[in-house]
Length: 154
Image (cartoon, rainbow, N blue to C red; front, side, top):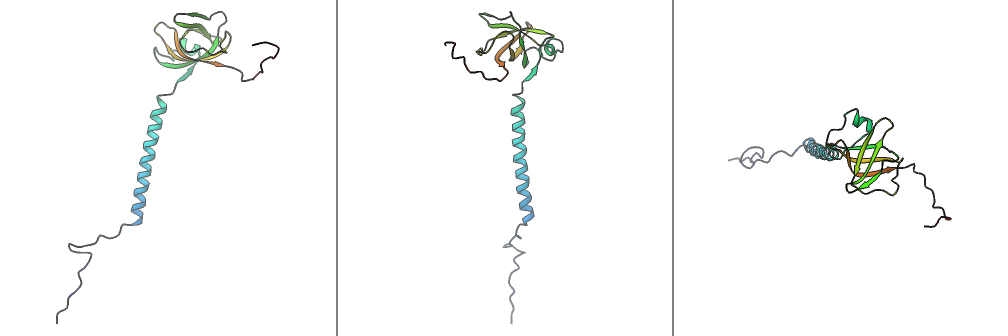
C-alpha cells in the first residue's frame, strides 16, 4: 500500500507567502503620512519666505544700514508737513520717524486719507539714488469712524 502525502504549502513552487503582519502595514501608512506632511511643510515654508517683507523705520534705513540697495522692504513713519509734491515721477514726499528722514518717490495709487502729518507704511526698495522707491502706500489711521457731517454738503 502506498501512502501519498499532501504537498506542503509553505515549500515548493506553489508556496503561499505568509499573510502580512498588521504592524508592518500600519508602519507604512505612518511613514507615508509623515512624508506627505514634511512635503507640505516644506512647500509652505518656501512659499512664505518669498513673501516676507520687513518693516523698518527711517532711522534703521539711514543709520543702521539694515536695507541694501534694491532690497524689498516696508518703511514706516510720518509724512513731514510741507514735503509733499506731485510730478511726472509720481508722488514725492519725506517720511520721518522723529530722528531721521528719508525722501520717498511713490508710483502706486494714493489713498484718499493720505496727507502731511499722517502715518504711512510704504512697500518698495531703496534706490542707488538713496531715495526710497515705493510702489505701495498704506495710510495708518486711528481706526475711529466718524459719520459724515450732514450740515456739510458733498
